[in-house]
Image 1 (tube, rainbow, N blue to C red):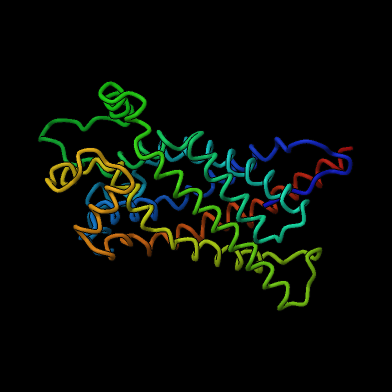
Image 2: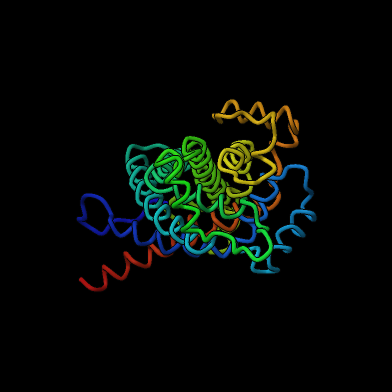
Length: 305
């Protein structure tokens, strides 16, 4: 994830903010997997096929893009910029200190994940999840509230705490998400280099980098219980609020106990299959493709000097 610096360049690479924002907007093409993952995590008794039919009933193919506009776009552009900027600086500094690429990727990803969670993701992830999980059927002749009306209602009732509900769970998820994705991806790159007889200075081909990112994205879904907890904490599904066993005040620990009591270990891993696909796609975009975009930017800067 570390960007190559121009000769003589000092300080931080502010261009990483733009690179991260652009590349993370590309990841929103995976919104159908995001919606399906959230549907299964919020409704843990549903199979994947049942979840697909439920989402389809909300307007056909349009149902799979719930929460995309504006919340997923706002979330993607802001959190992507923060992630790539923070992770790149930490990874570059770590490599300079002589740590391994895998450990540097782990440290960079963890730092970037926490930074993006608290800087941008609390309210946007809450609103995106609310849009996906809130009651979809309105009374006959009554138009459902818009996303902005929903945001205003939450803010009026609960203030900033309401729109940032579940932000600690988001931070834990993002820390483990991107730490694992970048760490495993860099570790896979190291393994591929060894198999092909290449050194750290040798560049990998596009397919090798995509393979490494795919490995990183798939293995990073070990933290699915954190994602299920996050969805439950932010869920506005009618059946969730009506459950008498659901704690009135949800914390990470109380939510974990509630899900485990209601659905067992399997409940903590609901939605992991679509999340594997989503994780692979996001890691390819934010690790492999981002590396190429940053290298292209640097070469362009050198040519213009």
